[in-house]
Length: 199
Image (tube, rainbow, N blue to C red; front, top):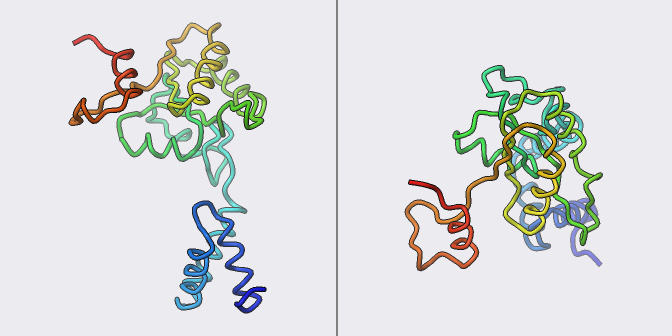
């Protein structure tokens, strides 16, 4: 039986369902919301409502957007000859934060993971193939996560796109600038050796 009033208990239950939020953290958040000004708490509720009602997937790349096309796809200054394939919208945000890439993106909305029951038809792979067929891309950059599933997804996509006369690349991996070899793990060193570049 809950030791909190009905509404508080319901809020704690809802908050504890969020990723990374346990029961204690949910209680702290609930009591914080009770202490802040009413307009601040209601602004949070309104932001949650807006994100559920106004945000959708971009019709071109499947990034999150409040319009038919996201800001990146509707920006005429982007390099429309390069397409970077990522697993999730948050991966796109990480790449954008670097400021090093000015091309377009395609968000798969996941990765192929047979053990988790995620198959290619559950992702936006058909839409990707259609984009490549209809576009003028010269390079497709595979930016899936460096995991077994991410690498498997990249390999699958490479096979699906092999009929097109475009260069397919992947993100470089390995030793980062400023790091020390003795502290790098085996996988990082193996990736660095495999992906070595000419000086």
